[in-house]
Image (cartoon, rainbow, N blue to C red; front, side, top):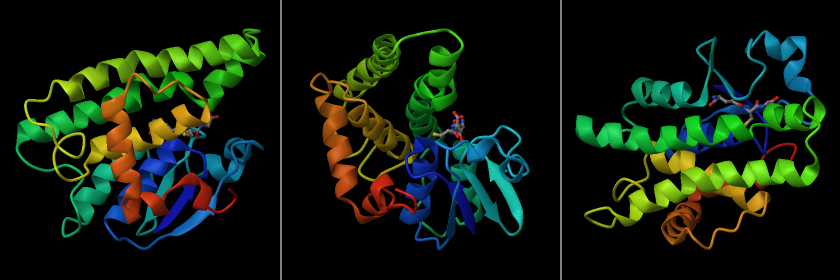
Length: 212
Ligand SMILES: N[C@@H](CCC(=O)N[C@@H](CS)C(=O)NCC(=O)O)C(=O)O
């Protein structure tokens, strides 16, 4: 398998965590988002959307981090499952993951921030306010969801990491990187701390990737 990724891409970080939790061996090809390598022909040939990650397996290139994670679950069922339990439990795991992947990540993505500054003339302070606003909006809701659980568990949706934790951890990394005040999110912070102590999560950390 080949993962085309970038060290600080949170969508690629999700896939690295899943590959690592599943113990799958893969090669990494960094695609530099800062220099715009993702918009060049070689990467467009892999992903017409000019985004990372792309995972190549058996000669086929797959895009969209959550589609890749579900593919890995289905193609390698003998490894740790990212979606598990009853249909209800799997829907809860997906719901948590999608709150991050659909409701925070797209509005705070690099190209959106670049558009705000470049095309809309937004200054650095307002860009940062935007970024923090969208993290707080969904983190506030997810914190409430976690605090209201009928039974408190070590991870977002149970005693094992699932796709929910796989999406949460990179988003918390971004929040720290952009100096978001996390004091209102003790449940999120505790789960993040628990996950990052696990070797599989630690190995996927941005600072340990090629090009970091
Ligand atoms: N929904 C996509 C999002 C992928 C994505 O936006 N990746 C970011 C890095 S985290 C990217 O390539 N950004 C390039 C850009 O914004 O120009 C997924 O989950 O794979």
